[in-house]
Length: 444
Ligand code: HSE
Image (tube, rainbow, N blue to C red; front, side, top):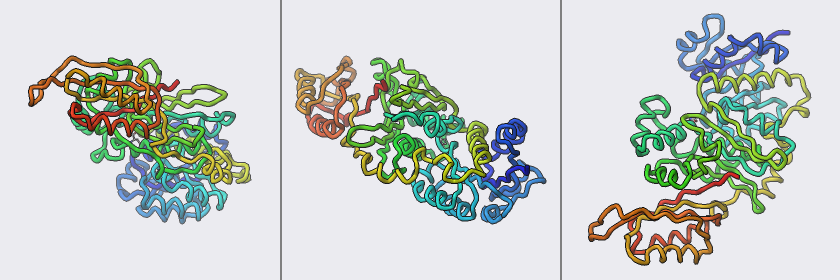
């Protein structure tokens, strides 16, 4: 049978990895797929560089629409990224009856509902294993391997850049700004790292995981997003002393009231396997009612790890290309006509309704009664304290007052109640600096 014909839109890091792995492993891939997979056409603005990667045998153009218009192309692989031209091209490819493989988490988290609907109407597949956690087959696991379960929660380290930065901050006791510069020098962080360090990339991925875990539409606009830019080396050190590591987690949880969808730095017990995921690696922990906890670990980015996911999608498409579209695996794991109703029953909760526990670092005047004042405000908000750590006075302030850090760990409470308590504590004259609040997840 004629190999399936693939058109690549963009041949940067992931595209060149896809080309290399398809060439190197072509026989085994064809044995799995039941048919060869051939890159027949490549579109890239840098035609010369693209040609240097794929050689003279493959048609290289600088116009992505020429790939979409080519009737011989069966599958379009979108590796451009972003919400702009990529969205138009994906929708045009679908309209032209092409199956689509994309690594574009931003596009799917924001415009997924429109894109999946268009693909459904046209009877084509939109596959996106590479969009979340690179080479880790977490999409496949959620969509197929765990389909017996009611998923209770998913928590993931799903941004390698920030995990690399946090690991370096902990190892070397350095502040965020210093480590970010080093990460940029080493190529772990981009020149403009905003999407990574502000948590946006992780929130795109968490949005997709949330939709797949609970059978609701993608709702990036409802995600709570907080990055790692405000984290101080002191907090990482104190967390360590209390038996915790700080990680940027993407969390989505089913509760009686709805779904939590949030990305923020989190203390997690150092003894958990996921707490020991270091450097640029990714890991996703999924809790299902039948299976219990399952953990998926691997490279979340990079040329061949991400290509591994792209090619797995191509193999799936080859296997199912002749199937009746109604019998294909639904992209978000649940039958698409059920998503909207589920969104009504399981709304994404505002952050004030999220229930979690907290680490607080409060810079205070080291005077009699300060601890009692603070703990009584916490108790007054009906928040239960788990542990208190007070360091020796470490600094003499301008008025000759000794200062210290008071560290408080709480039990679970509503975020709205914690906000109210923190506003009252912050207003105390003995509180000398903005309070640091980091959420804490036991993940058990
Ligand atoms: N920039 C991402 C990360 C990889 O650092 O994990 C692509 O999503």
